Amino acid sequence: MCGITGIVTKNRDDIGALLVMCSRKLTYRGYDSVGVAAVKDGVVDLRKDVGTIDEVDKMLGLSKMRGDRGIAQLRWATYGAPTKVNAQPHFGCTPDFYGAHNGNIHNYAEYRQELIETGHIVRSENDGELCVHAVDKYYEETGDMFEAVRLSTRDLKGAFAFSVGRADEEKIYAVKMGSSLVAGVAKDATIVSSDLPSILPLTNNVVYLRDREMVELTAERVRVFRIEDGKELDREPEISNVDPHAAEKGGYHHFMLKEINEQPKVAQDVMGVLEGSRSEDWLKMIEDSGRKFLVACGSSYNAGIVGTYYFNRLAGTPLVPVIGGQFIPMYGKSLADDSLCILVSQSGETKDIMNVLNLVKETGKGKTLGVVNVIGSTLMFGADAYIPMACGYEVSVPATKTYFSQTIIFAYLAARLGERNGTIDPSEAKEFIRSLAEDLPRLTQQTIDRTGILTKSLAQTLIDVKDLYCLGYGFTDGVAREGALKIKEICYNHCEGMYSSEFKHGPLSIVTDNYPVIFVTTREDSWMVINHINEVRARHGRTIVVGEYEESLSHYVDREGDFLTIPESDILLNPLLDVIPLQMLSYYLSVDLGINPDLPRNLSKTLTVD
Ligand code: BG6
Image 1 (cartoon, rainbow, N blue to C red):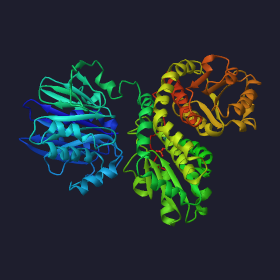
Image 2: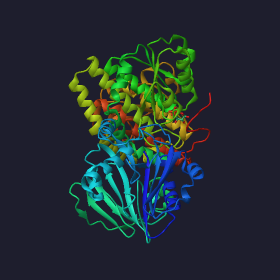
Image 3: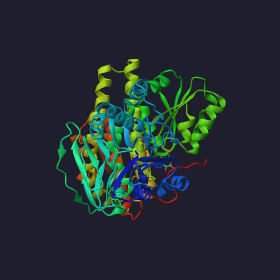
């Protein structure tokens, strides 16, 4: 996820200061690299580099740049490492065109090749550059900037928004094609941006945009058009009363809740990456390997556990799940030349994982495939290949959307592998992948909407609970562990996640009257989980259930609110959706306990220590 900001002023000359002030509000959207293109007397001054906006401003004097209009971009790298050349904004073939994008251009590889073959000078590996070249291309054909911007969207596939200008034009344009974009009208300027936070320092006179619309900014006004036919739309500015500070959290009280709510879009974005052409390389790497280890920590490990069940069920392929710190003492000596270590780390910096990466590199035994969110991280650079999780910047220390992205990646890879090795029919694989791409975003939103109220009231009943269990079976083994980890991380309760059939072999002794045990299940495993539920209820424990509604399960909760139901869905989507009620429950319980879930005590977002 990245953040773009475009501003056109009336006879002002401090465009650098304005762009830095406004785009700084988008830091949560990305901090790998930053750039500003400022236009003065028809000449574009473009400065960009790796680092946060303050670092790059200090290095390159971004806020001192002169001009009356310009575009800034904060990058969260997905395509192309965070380097100076991949930073945004970009020029077109010549410095006449300048622009920046947010989102993913899924036909990046093919279109980049096409542009190069038709003579375009493409300088970077960043998909955002292609947006500027697309406009450049159609300007050559039409000689009209408005038409060039409008027509350029025909070449670009994916979910994105971009802003672009021409050195000799006083206007700036922007298109909204699946990524967020909003505009604003101030007394002596107009602005377009990825998010409201960067509009508000300039004005609360906001022009909201919808997908497949484009805007034309002049110093006086914002005009809105339908991209399809160029028809002008009557869209008046509205006064926004969102508090500029709250807006950085998108109006949510905490980043954790914001990031839980970003999961429908994460599902779309990560599927966009997976359905791109690079999946072939990842699948081949897995197929060509012998023993496959899945190595991770924390929430990434729990996502990996979910992945092992998908790999077994859909691809008949065993993955050995290993906690980062365990790998070397447990398997370090058993690596073979054809081993594969799938290193799962949203930060790409967790030292327990880096140790494994270094071991494989030093011994030359096997290969590494990173599953990583922070592009430009050590894991990204160091692994033999990497799968970008395309989640955007996760601010809250407890992982939510990154865990969600990881489970989708494993589900997708397992389906593709199973189709290729004949474990499942191509039709089953295709249907599941379709449901991942088309049904999951909607079902995720429905689950969030549905369980918000349920978990808020359930949390109230757990305020005084200091000890509980969260049990899963089969596919929900990893989900239950993740639910337990969330409660441990941000409620400071002892909540142990474990396998439900194992509970009777000892831990069951903890159960006394009303002792709470959460059971996470799927439609397919509920017949088994009911046995384990009864083992707890026979000893007067309190059972809380997470899963699709089933009459058979509803008999085993004492109050309706103890059944957190997810919408009916393909059985293979159940494990992905089951985590959402647990994320929401831990969030509301944390807030009820007076804890800030974003910054829980003792923890850090990334532990680069052993
Ligand atoms: C912990 C974080 O420090 O590291 C967890 O608090 C995270 O949220 C774990 O899951 C692993 O981090 P990463 O970046 O390797 O996925």
